[in-house]
Length: 200
Image (tube, rainbow, N blue to C red; front, side):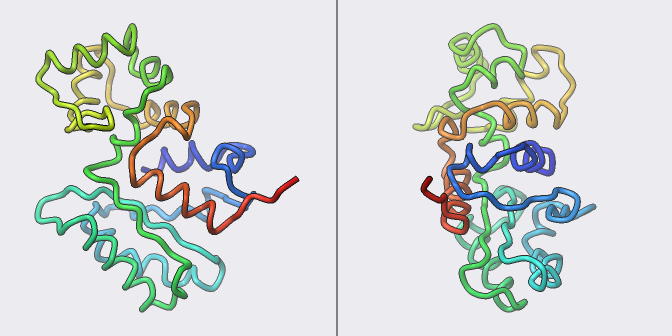
């Protein structure tokens, strides 16, 4: 998640890709990583991590996976985090919880040659066909039902070690419009609302 955010928001003029207005983002000071915590820890403690940032920042995004053992529904995860942030002092409308269902790898699977290249696969049609042969089903959006396991299967087949840099390359190069994941689209729309593009 850290690499994906840095790769996406750390680029020069990243706001043009998002279709929003320019805003400052420094990964060293504006990206808070819950070191040693997994998604349940972020779910329970995001408001504590972000409590003091309400004095220096106008907005806060919390991004986490929806799937873990004993997880409530994505809607309940989202509602609880946003309620806790409000109770921690963030004004209503200044925060958003982005819950990726089921997990971050859903952002990686998109109809883009950059995905195929990063995964070292010969071609997009062949990749989907191979995944089907391996028993992976696909949802209506064209993404594998088990996105994380699908990435791991492809990396095993191409004899690549799992590396966050692969995710970073995809996010850095692929078009925002190609990612159909609802959580990603919600994040983009949120940033557009918070930072409207100015007409030239």
